[in-house]
Amino acid sequence: MGRDRKVVGTIWQKTIVSGGTRSRASIADKLFPALDKSGIEYIVNPFVGETCLININKLVDMCKEFKPDFIIGTGGGKSLDTAKYAAELYGVPVVTIPTIAATCAASSNQIIVYSDEGEYLENVYPKTNPPLVITDPEVIVNAPIEYFISGIYDSLAKWYEGSASLPGSDNADVFDYMALSIAKMLKNTIYEEAAAAMEAIKKKEINKEFIDITNLNIYTASTVQALGIKAVRNGIAHSIQNGLTLLEGSHDVTHGEKVAYGIAVQLNVLHSLKEEMDELIDLYKKLGLTPTFKGLNLKFTEETVRVVAHKAVTDVLMAAKPFELQMKLMHIYIIAH
Image 1 (tube, rainbow, N blue to C red):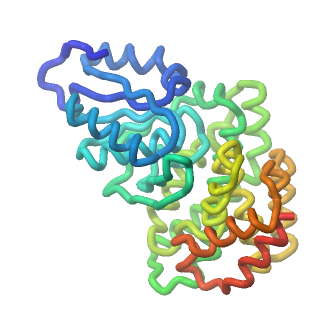
Image 2: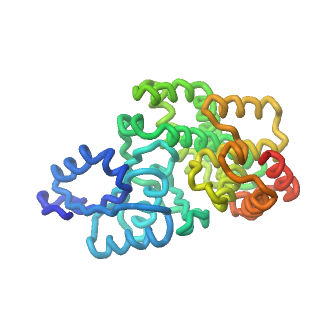
Image 3: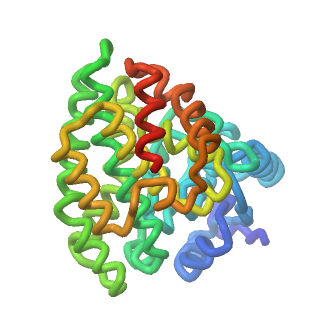
């Protein structure tokens, strides 16, 4: 549904708005009138499914035909990553509008690619982070609360994975140490403010804690990623998440919940202090998570554990870390109960 150009000579005159039905609906009363007022011609790409080659290529093909000056991605991580990847391939900027605070995909220079069925395949790193990220607190506070919780878990992993991977790195620089310092601040803020932010969402109110955690989920976590590109990157927790994507029913579990389970596995793998595990589990209880297969509503059998363990320990994110294979397998099995 293209629009006639009303402004001649502007840099950005045409765009494709790519996102799911619900995400577009949540911002339709602000986004589309703003585009019309600015004289920006647009068409819509209804996103459904995964950040997979079919969806990415579909959007690239639309770009070749419509020739947009930029792409607008709306929604959650998979929708935003699809828009980011298509923009990278077509060679135009991407503007992201997260309508949930479930991941840092909106501002991250990382794209997670899945198969058509949702199995994790690879990470892709575009040349830059999205140049413009627009977040509306009123939209985030009215989104389903489980996505906000997912973002808390995904952000929390930046500290646990970074603090485990940096000490064993032989190529870390000052930016990696900056990243870990930010990750520690992120972790401390989550432990201090997550409960109050949750209460604000339940009441559909916007308070300081809600804004803080929203910003951590969407912006701060991606800052850690960008600064810590050498030595403060994904590790055990996200590798476990990637393994869990193979299980039936796992797509009904949020990305953050699977990562949260992965953090608990990681603490077991590394023989972390009991106090550290107790602190983590106490937070999970407050947020309503039991970090086990049963707690995630996933089937626990010898075979499902084997599948997750094999995927995790051969995952590129874990393969670079100096952890002994049998120890990984053993602790993955134990915590799964």
